[in-house]
Image (cartoon, rainbow, N blue to C red):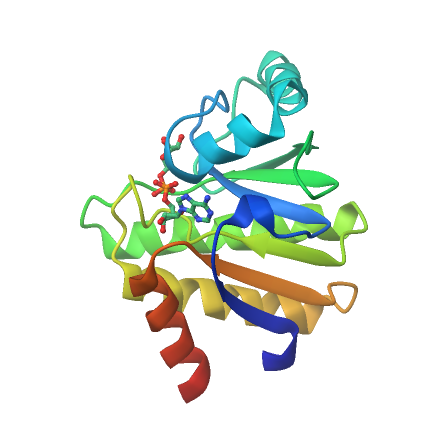
Length: 174
Ligand code: AR6
């Protein structure tokens, strides 16, 4: 499994993949952090698709995911998922964060995606503890890869060096 996972230190908007995952909020209308960068660089196509989804289902619940076109990003799709905001409830938060990853893989599979990039969902504005978030992410990604052979490559794109070091250490020790 390990050889289908790449840990990258960089900006997710600059790395080509079939699908780029966005750490969005329930409104799907954009925000700061990686969400801001994705909407800014992707452009109007993404916002238009998000607005259509809002009109149909009223946004996106925590732990769920939706898919849109990717506009000017080096990708075919953006998969928007809404991570939990850390509130100290480890069990519930972990379950919701895990659902984010699993639901992104479901959408990727249904849309014929073979390469996908993830940011470190919930570890910025939503303040989820980085080490715990990485454990949950790697477990959900490994599980999804073992059930899903159509995904050839998963990029875990760490923007901050702290997350990058955590992932490198965990992959190295696994
Ligand atoms: N490429 C990759 N990762 C990035 C980038 C980038 N260009 N920019 C930031 N990160 P955050 P959240 C990392 O705050 O915690 C937004 O306002 C960042 O270092 O983007 O899930 C949404 O609209 C961090 O490790 O998302 C929501 O309201 C990780 O991305 C809320 O923030 C996630 O940080 C979501 O909070």
